[in-house]
Image (cartoon, rainbow, N blue to C red; front, side, top):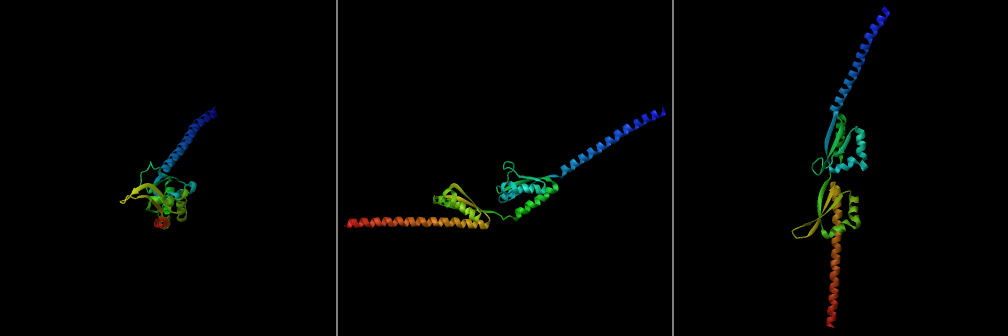
Length: 224
């Protein structure tokens, strides 16, 4: 009888105690989990960096391989903002970096170092006489492609015609790159323009000589 009462009493004490202990463990675990989530959220950072246009290709890499490696290396996510999401100077684009605060800061340092190490690009304009545009471009763009390949400069011909005070027609050629690349490309363009000018002079001289020859023959016939 006493044994039975003792067991009931023991069970009555153990079961509530066990429930309390298990409940306390679950409560403590959930509390730690929530604290960790709040900590992770506080450590999450979104950072925006202005990247010059001439650096974008180096950051992205061929087929996006460079930026993929960069994300894996620093355990972050990054992408360039779309043009309609960010309004900025046309010479820059916004790179958005997301991740844990210390990873984002490490990635930012590397991006800024990369930008500083890349040679700065410049841009100049040349005005090409309308009649010479075809000669500069070449058949299927072969001439302008040769200039690009040999100098590594970027050449873009604006087909918009510009009239000067003498009412002559020109097209604007934009050359961009490093100062050395621009100088080399400009020299090649000027050389082609000079060769075209010489050809035209030779053609004009041939035409004059032909006209004079015909005139001399006519005079001879008239004298006879």
